[in-house]
Length: 486
Image (cartoon, rainbow, N blue to C red; front, side):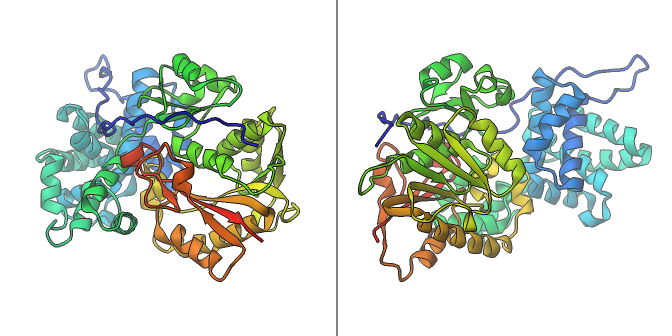
């Protein structure tokens, strides 16, 4: 059973995502008494930085609530989002510049003032906002919350920041590119060095590729939509949303950055489409298209289903051929999201640990195991994540990944296929996990994932496939296809 028919892929646009800073500031609000009043867009951005620091909030989840509470929309909402996400994303670079101007360790700057300094420094270095507006608006935020003395401190530092461009600060503060090229690129593109090293390892040491990858991860992402198969075509969805059909996924649409909250689009609210990166669509489609030995009986399994995007796609595909998807998710609140996004599709959601779930072994034709990972492949969509993760996270995650892949291989029938997926190119989470799980096993064969995704170029030499932001405009999704032989 193969419910999908692919279409020829098109060459992706070669233009890199637009650099942060293409959002013009809204008109300044002034009070009748003369002093400038608090700008609500910048106040919302600062509130986001505070939430990320104090509560370890996820920026992409916290920002919509802040915008609703502040009643911001249109240009104000766009500016708040750009400044908040941008300052989260560029934190390492911003902190280095602030420390140089303050001439003191960041630990000696009160955290709320440091948040404001990050916000002001981002405006000065990475937007087209006039310097006086960037400084004055930030100073007024501080004056309102912390008084004139703190406002004067922030004013002095920001005026120092504005004496140089971003490029000049990079030249002054970044590691020497001839002695530490990876460290230099990490600083310039606002990444921790360990992540830059992990990217370099996955790219076989190519500095040109590393530069392009980190530039793409340091830019605002394009919004991708999935049109539910059988409900709406990509062409119809593009027409309804003002987007363009995706270059590779036959169900995908790409929207321009800054086009508003995609969750408010009619097609999304009506259940015809979901927000889903094209790379995630492609790995799910590859599992659906992978060749089986024997008949596809229509029993498919998503072993790590939350929050439900891939489950929605797989369920729609298997449902069109009369089959059914089982979806496993251990967290009840994420299981609820799976139920919501797969409503009216042939899906049974199980709230259970995928490593020891309530399902019978060896019964499924196709099993997707999209494992929890560091998320290094989706840093552009999770602005604060690069500064929250650490190298020590990798060991615990790879142990979990190995256990989940073992479970997936138990659940698939002889002749069936497992799709092992991570949203991270870190070698320990990709090839390292595969090598550990498959070592000594003679009952599993690797399929060539690059052949299954034949319309997508530059996926590597196989048999695994690696998508990249700078090559494909997607998250850095890794895919291995494993067929059980005994």
